[in-house]
Length: 535
Image (tube, rainbow, N blue to C red; front, top):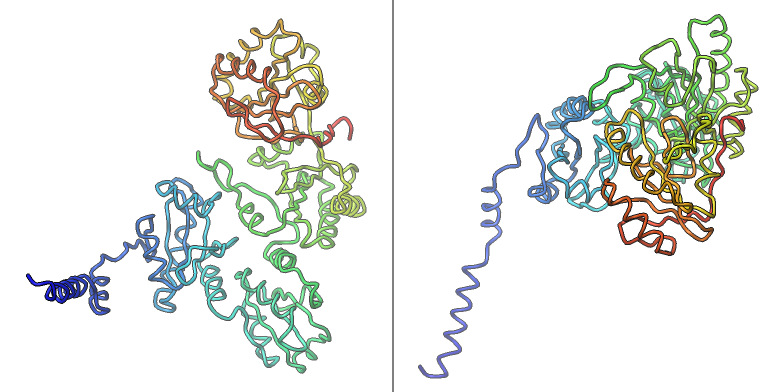
């Protein structure tokens, strides 16, 4: 073949090859149409790693539920989620609902950092980056409202008093923002809050006549309950906090004082409260609990005092009543270590830190409650830690017995290394390991520089140590420059012993890993433990 014919033939070949490999828009559409549809169950897409990207690309708004199939709360939740999907199917077809069983999709669980179940997230415009968390929504009607407010206007524009009255009477609770004009920071915050509170209708107005009819002169948020105003909050530009307003408004979905009660239990979730779901849906991290029998002669007076204090701290502290005559509340008594002789008793719990605080005064008066709550909010209240009494023979056996009252003095000494087992007596795993721990104590009983110890963490609060799943083990090395080491090895006598020997040879810096997988933690600033005796 001649050279001058080679190039045209090569070009013709490449052109034909590329043409054969390319797909026209119509062909691409036909290819897409041939793909099997993602399966649905009760109008909800069944999503997994292999079809998740495709679902995102084909849907403008995708509301996804991450759940565990064995969870009772997930099962109850599913009915409301599916009903919302059914109602929106024809009304707003651009919104799709999907669900992912994270038991079988660990990669998706890890990618989106799913810690609690069920968790719901909204994915917008096919992006898997920064999905919007849908928190505290459990009813079908609330899901519908939440999604609509995220995909369209979050509030109703009110132009007349008649419109305002209609909105107020449409539901038990309603919120109206009264503004001098609708283009300022306060309006933006108000609209953001409306998106996160789907439980009630939101409206806003800049009508002078409407504001005058409700005697409103400044930018103000008003909460209406059963047609009557129950709270006015003046809004000032630059000073509004979205979370603070959301907390405040959501507290009106609960009574001023909410009674804690038990509904039923399962092996998966042994103590599900009728009210606890509602309580934890309100984003207030400070809870105060009054433990008292509701049939006592003094109950009415105590309850009225409690309600009065609750009104003063709405949005800052959630007030909960626990009836000590209700036997099914036993686990919450155990958690706070409330005894019959303690009642009436008042405790504050911080949900973030899990720290508990005891009201110093015994009498439940408005003044004592006010002082206790204000002291807590100002950061002046002392953390309350329960402790068993120190046993007389705590140091007579090879394994030393620690309690809250002697924990710091033994563990944080500078002369001896202390290896501690943190256990729960009711735990099968703990009971199985206690004989091995006793053998370790016998092995090191003659060593002057090592203490093998144990502590019952269900009866003793230890603020200075981060608690993990029972059992767990922590080494507290001798010397002021050493840092505690969390044990991460096997639960055998040989492994425990090898860990101890290795640690006795190792001098590590805070934060570095030890040779057997433990993590050295920087505890340069130890927290003070306050025991029941000190209070």
